[in-house]
Structure formats: C-alpha cells, structure tokens
Image 1 (cartoon, one colour):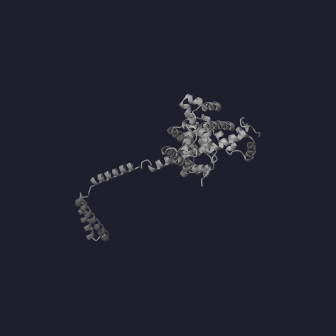
Image 2 (cartoon, one colour):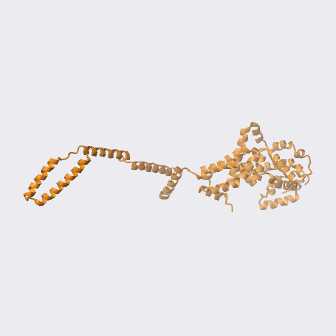
Image 3 (cartoon, each protein chain N blue to C red):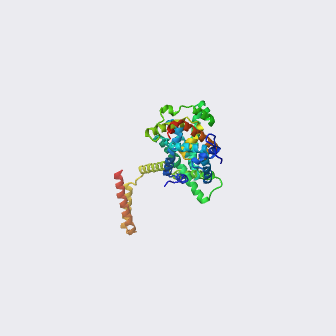
Length: 198
Length: 207
C-alpha cells in the first residue's frame, strides 16, 4: 500500500530514509521523462533533474503534510528548463515568446512523416509501425513550440489535470486548453500517415 | 449548446471538448456536452480523431535517469535531511528539553540562544573543574620531586650520636640499676637504648 505524499513528508521529517526513497521512486521517472522530452539532451536533462530534486530536498523540512510535491517538482523543472533555454540563445528565447497561432503556422510547414515513411499503407498495430510511430511522435513533439510542448507533456507524463497544469504553468485554464488544441492539431498533421487507414 | 456543421469551428469544443475527452468535466457538464456532441458534426469529428490518437500518446517512452544522477540526489538528501551535525542535534535536543520545561517561548531565537549559552557555561565549568589551578599533574610531579630531593638532603645531613656517647649512657644506667634505683624504669630504658644501638648499626652498615 502506497503512502500519501503528506504521510511521506511527515516520515521524512522524522528522519525516515525509506520514506524519501519511496517518494523519489514515485516521481523520478515521470519528472526525468518530462525534462528529457523538453531538452532532448541526457546530460543537461540529468543536471536539471538533480537540481529539481535538490530544491525539493531543501524545502521538505519546512513543508507540511498539505504540500503538493508533484506540482512543485514539475513547476521547478519547468522553470529550470526555461532558464536553460534562456541561457542557450536569443533565438530560442524568440521561439519561447511565440503565440500558439504563430507556432502552429510555423510547424505546419514542417516535413511530414509521409515523406519519411514513403508509404501510408502500414497500420500502427504492426510492431515496426509502432516503433516508427513512437519515433514520429517524439519528433513531432520536439518541434512543438515551448508552451504547447509544456502543456502536452505535463498532461501526458505527470497525470495532472488541465487545471493543475495551468497552475504549474501559471496561466489561465483556457490558455492551457488552447495550447493543447494547437499541439494536438500539429501532432495530428505530423502523424497523419499513421492514421489514414483508420 | 448549439450544434454546428463539420466545417465551421464549434466554440463548445474549445471550451469543453478537451475536458470531456480527458474525462475532466464534472458529471453534470459531461452530460450536457454529451448531448451537444450527438448533434454537432464538428465536435464529433474532433472527438473521434482525438480518441484515435490518444492511446498512442502512451507510446512516449519513459526515460530513467542514470544511477549516477540518482546517487547525487540520494547523497544530497542524506546530508541535508538525515545527517544533521552533532551540534545541531544537541541544540535541537536542548531546545526540546527547554520547550518541555519552560513551555513554548515567545521569541523563536531565544531558545537556541539559551541553548548556546548553556553549552558555553558547561564547557567553561568542565574545563576549570578538570584542572583547578595549582593541582594539575605537572605541578603534582614537581612537588613530589621537590619532596624527594629534600628528604635526600635531610638524610645526607643527618647526624648520628656517637657510639661513645651511647656507651656512657649505658654505663650510667647500669650504675643506677646496680644502685637499685628505679629498677623497672631503667630496665625498659636499657632495652630501648639497646634497640637504638642495633638500628644505628644497621643504618651505618647501609651508609
């Protein structure tokens, strides 16, 4: 039986190391997957991952049992990713500032997977096709503008509701939903060859 | 909720469609949107397309951090959460004791300050109790050595009564015994002097 986050926090405050291990195991894959999908570089993703958990460790002694670990971890990771991109280049910064509509127009002109696959006869049920779909999905996500990517990945990796995602990203629910709509449209366009038979 | 044809965008989809597809609408709103969906081709199409893609989103690979990255987190957590310094632990315990005996204090910094003051006082007392002035080991050794030297000097300068003097004493006592005066007393004295002579002879042998 898994303890609630609040119980684990209380146990950690009583110096229970197993409680921390349990908490870390609960979130490490989810958080790292999210960061990796955002950064697409294992070493940088690991640095951000470690930093995010270090920040959690620092805050745990002051946290009460109502403290929401998941939103904290995702918000921290998100902010660290944004900082990383800001430091990277001005060009990246410009892409962060894009409106969803602009981004959609930009991604619409991206190379479609029909060109890559050369055929649209295969169905996703086929194992090889599944591999290709997996790769295509990752690539399609990687070309999404930052905010759309944020909403999409947070919703699908963290299991948070749109309301929670909006809170993490510090934006209204409608804005988060709008980003998701554009993200889905782009993904649909990019993955069209895989679904044409259906 | 009004119905729309497939080409024109439906505002209902923007507002409720995604929440409905991800099962995040309240039961009441979900019921209303379901009713709308049945009569709206645009929403039906969007819903159908999303439902086809949705299972494939789980194909997104989960990534695991390397053991090194995990170790870094564990190590940091161990240092930060589970191994406070001995002093911190001591202050914490003292604070707890103070809290118990004095009740929660109004000023949060007062207790740690008191704890530190008590530590300093105890350290001070311990140091001075362990070696009170004039009674430490070095001084004791010095004192013992001085006593030994004095005893040696005293021994060296010791003057022994001459044997002749003692013999005179004995003759005098013998004369008195023969005179019958104080017989018992002198017998005792005689024995004591004889003992002294033995001791002196032994001492002289050693010297």
